[in-house]
Length: 557
Image: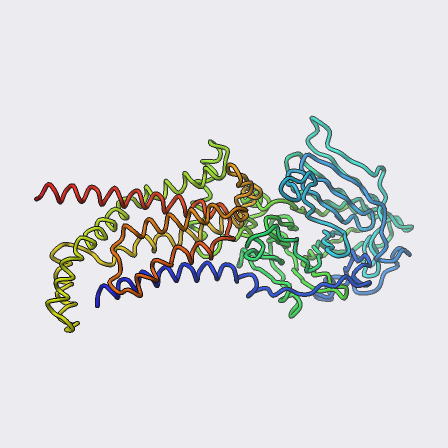
C-alpha cells in the first residue's frame, strides 16, 4: 500500500542517517588500523639523521654516493640544545644538524584547563617527532655518515617586545676552508620558521650538494581527548604537486612502499588532529619526494632538491621554510598553495566551507562558538523555510486525510490495487504530495555530516566553551543533557506527523528518538546542540504551518 511504502522510505532515511554516522565512527579504524609501537631499546636511541635514505630515493647522479670524511662524532650523537621563544612558539634546536627537536604551541593548552602548552614536535623516545634539514654532500656539512655539528654564539633566543623577528645563526666549517652558515628565522605572529643556508667555498675544489628536508615521527598518535574526535581524523603524511594538490600517505602505505616522485613546487607534511608540520620549498623549485620507515620505527616524509654547486672561492645560498602549528586555513594557504586542503571536511566539504565561513563571521561578532552554531542553524532553517513549509503543509494535509483513507480501506477491502489507485486519486484531488514528508530528513543528512566535519576538523573550536556545563563543544556532553533534549525534540516533532497505518511501523518510529539518543550520546556537544535547535525550530515551524492550515480550513467552511 502507498502509505506503507512512504513510511518505509521515511524509516529507511532515518536508518541511513544512523548508518552514515556510524560510518563516521568507524572511518578511522577501517582505513588506518593501529600499529603497535613498543618502546624498545632501539627506539630509545636518538636517530635524527638519515640522509642515506634520502640519497637512495634520488637518482645516483643527483647526489654524491661516496662516503665522506665527515665529523668523527657519530651520526646519532646530540649536540647542544638552543632554546627559542616567540609570542607563539617555544622551540628547541639541536646544534647537531640544526634540527628542530621540540615545538610547543604557546597559544594552545595541552588539555582543557591545563597551563602547559601543546607539545607538537618532541624528541621523546616513545613519540619522537622531529623536523630535519641540511645540505647533503660528500664534502659536508652533512654526509651519509654524519650530520654537521654546528656552533652557536648563544644558547637562548627570545622575541623581545617591539621586536619583529629573531634569527638563530649556526656555523660550521672544515679544515679545507668550506664554511656553512645555517639560519633559522622566527617572526612575530607566525608559525613559519624560515631556514636558509649560506655556503662559502674557500677550498680548491668545487662544492656539490643537495638541500634536503624531512619530517620523522613514530606511529604513535597523540592521546585522544575523548569522544569520537581522534577516531575520525587523519594521522599520517601528505604531499602536494601541481598535478595532485593533496595526496595522503598513511603509515601503512609507507611500510608497503617507499615514495619516489620528482615534481616542481609542492610541499611535504605530517598531519595529526588539529595540527600540522610541513616543509615548503621555494616556488618553482624542483624536488624529489621520498618516504621511508627506518629500522627503529621512524616514519619519514621528505624531499631533496636539485644539485647545488659552489665553485672555488664562490658563495651560494639555499632556503626553505617549515610550518609547524595549528591547521588554520588562512595561515596554511598563506604558507603554500593547497596546504589548507589538509583540513579535510570530508564528502560535503563545500557545505562545510559555507557553514564554517558563516560560523566564523558570527563568532567575530558574538565571541562564542556555541551561539555561532545556534545562529547558523537558524540561518539554515530560514534558507529552507519555504521548502520545509511546503512539506509540512503536505504532511498536515495527509494527517487530515486519515479518516477518508480509512473509508477507502473499508470500501476496497483486500483489493490493494484499487485501494492504491483510489488513494493516489485522493492525494491528487487534495493536492498532497505524500513523499514531501521525507524532505526534511533528506535536507538534514548532508548538513548534519558537514557540520560534524566542521566540529571535528576546525582547530578554532578546540576547547571552545558554550554555556554552563559545556566547556568544550568538540567533546561529548558530560551529563548527556543535549542528547536527551535532542531525543525529546525529535519525539515531539514526530507527534505532529501522521502516524503510520501499520502498528509495527508505528512502534519503529516511536523508538527512533530513543535509538538516536543512545547512538549519538557520545557525539560532540556542538553537533547535539545543532540537532536540538534544528528539531526545535522544525517543531515550531510545523506547528505554525498546521495552525495556519487549520484556520484556512475553518474559514472555507
